[in-house]
Image 1 (tube, rainbow, N blue to C red):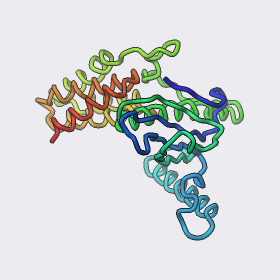
Image 2 (cartoon, rainbow, N blue to C red; image 1 turned 180 degrees about the horizontal axis):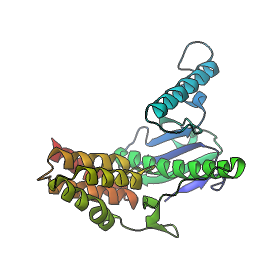
Image 3 (cartoon, rainbow, N blue to C red; image 1 turned 90 degrees about the vertical axis):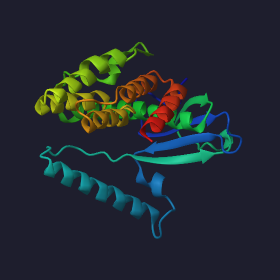
Image 4 (cartoon, one colour; image 1 turned 90 degrees about the horizontal axis):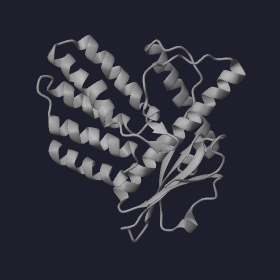
Length: 257
């Protein structure tokens, strides 16, 4: 249940995302402020002029990003620095008066709220960045690169989400296992790269990294039950079943302990 306040077709890049933990009596509201303004994040936390500190933070982050891009041979492209601030509130009355607000849902636990907020933030970020890129294409006649790899957004139709389990297992996990068993590292790295591209810009990316780690730790005999939990967790997150995702996350932690 997403309730968005603002213009979804013209996002500002500054949104207050929140959900309520029903089993939490004190400070039940868990929220994140997702923003393109560093002043929102560091505000009065530093000595001196907060706005000057914010501008310096953004300058340093952009310089570091460009240095990394140069080391990796990535062409110079526009860089947007985005910031996230975790917030805890005791009631809705404390929600700041921000133009864009996104109420995710009322859920049973704090863990489910955090997962839901992260998922909503990933969706908002993808939408916002897509609009920025379209603006560049129109204003600067930049041609976006063709990408024939499916992404998680291809499993959404008319606002409804389709399961991704079969696709993830058939197109990524099984071929990666076969490649590692055959010692074909080049093929494995190619599939791994496409797997990362599939999840890029979503909450699924951390689980993709973990799955690859499980496969690489024991290439000839990976832990199938652990892989199954990861795939089901990814599917639950994609379908916005955050309480199921939280349970699977706990099962994964127990299996890895």
